[in-house]
Length: 380
Image (cartoon, rainbow, N blue to C red; front, side, top):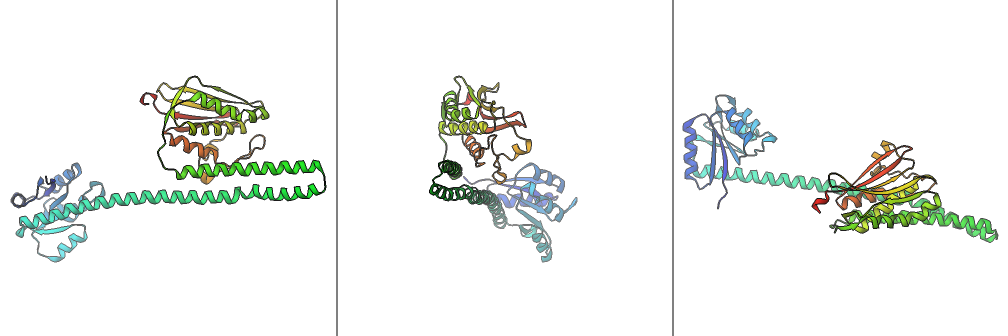
């Protein structure tokens, strides 16, 4: 079944409007005609409904045709095809109308069904083409922005590799050279110190490489994540047990307050996030402090996992820049622990891949709380 062509006719002359109706009736178009007897009424209708094309009388008593044409073609109206009905024979007038945006002009004296139908079909096709072109333009712009973002991330990733990996490897090379010379001197005390420094530099380089590879892999992996109901308490206990030795050496207590809470998530992703957050909290909590994993179901049925610490806290500016790779800052922990600055970026991306969100509340000197917020449990 042919699709209907919606046409707006703006003409103050009833005889001319009747001629248009006759021509349409004699054509092979399937049409719906809306009529307006003046410019004001026509512009009002153009703002209320969607039309495939507009037939506009060149001489209207209440407005200049060029002004009406400009108003009809305003972007907010979404009209791309205006055909001028005119009794003028001056070719310059026709050219001026075309320059002003009219798609075509038709002589009232020679208004024939076939010519009118052809002009309207062209107008409708043009409207469809322009809509598709605009959609393609938007999609291209979105892809361009995404590509720009990927290029920026690639450049930042390369700069991180160039800058951050160079330091520990230079330290390893320098310390290993010093170690070999010290070993030749047969000084066990100095050998032990140099060997420990080499080991620390190697651990730092390895941790940075792991963070870089994990984060880079996440950026390249665009596949869907399969979620399932997982036991938060079991994952929280696993995360705290992995970090407990580090916490004990530093004198920080780690505990969890999760009952039998279940949440729809990816088990390995959630475990990675909690390990990173607990490890980060330990890093910025001095001896005698505490780190706690707690769970709650809000009144809105959202499930929230909190990782709270009594550490040094952060300023609002630091929070604002926390998840921006272009402003990545590596801050030593309270015991001088070093990091890559990528752990929290990885956590944020993993949380969003699970359809949840991460919130941060912190005050300088009062500790920090990271919250993982999962949507309405009633829908799961």
